[in-house]
Image (cartoon, helix red, strand yellow):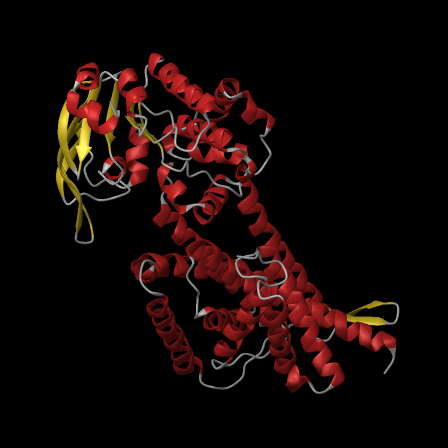
Length: 234
Length: 289
């Protein structure tokens, strides 16, 4: 479904991605793990078209989408739940959701999908007319996920969805990701919570200093001594 | 001086102020979303005033009727300006943006000088000297009409931002630019629309102001300053602030004419500016940062 090959990305002179290749199959969950600054978010932003790669290709559903602007990438069906949630704090919960359906892909089913999102997260319905900046961290994460669903994505990239959330909410977010995946959405999961994401994923990649240093079945990585030492503290 | 004269003058000042509000609204919208200060704002207003005069003397069109044409033309101009000229400067340092828009301002002033010469021109509609009488209070018809249309245009713009999908998307860009990219908003297009709308606002305001004051090409820098004074008094980036700031400045100008002489009006608005900067630097409606 998504094939990334030899992706290179620079911020000024600093190399953030150094020949990254990743393959995501239809319907699976792929985990991307690595330390802070390893290039996980850079990879997501390069796929999403927010950053323009210097070299390499991104193919989605057989189409070369390298260097496309983010609005075209989104409209092809690659959604994103970004790090830090990136909601619109001064707009209402409903307006935030509507913004997820501005891309042509989301427009036709905007109203129905708002209902679906409210059914999935009843707390958002209660806060429909409230400014999104007044929501709690957990509610904001639900809003960010709901807003992403508004665009009818085939693939959702989650960037640190559990960051800064209480343990009970972390479990809820992971459960939501599982539910979405079971309903047919392909998922890329970038997480600092390595154990949890490796348990959920089928395939996984380990990023270090902008390179993929290890990849394979997630369960094998979970047993890998290097991974256990470096990321699981075992 | 009797109280009804004072009331008439103050109402006249507030009505002129509403036209200023519309001008300042344009500046505020552009700054609030794109974070670029349009240093050619007053010069664009002068361009619109000349368009109003030209369509009146040449085509016999009342500036209120030519307003949609002028505002529409300036919208296209603003859209193209953002796309072709300002966009590459958005990520650059502020002083470079300043120099760019200053260049636009200088081009506009001198273009107008070349085309129309330095003389003052005016629009004299057939109701120019009529007034509404509310008991003992006289209200100039032109001022009432200009203010009324100004309020309508401003209300239309506010509704656009509140209720339409594109308007909300523009607000989203100003609320969280990264978030706007994440959901796939077309930011370059929305920025160009915003610049176009801001310039259309000042175009509409220019048309209306051509009913009230004489226009010369050299009026531009003065109006740019006036627009800055208004948005700083009202609060940078706040639409309500721009509207209220315009009325406050209009009133202060009228008071200057009443208490001293009309030519001292700038002293009053600049005095207000200093007071605001000293005691409420975020402006009347601005948020503390």
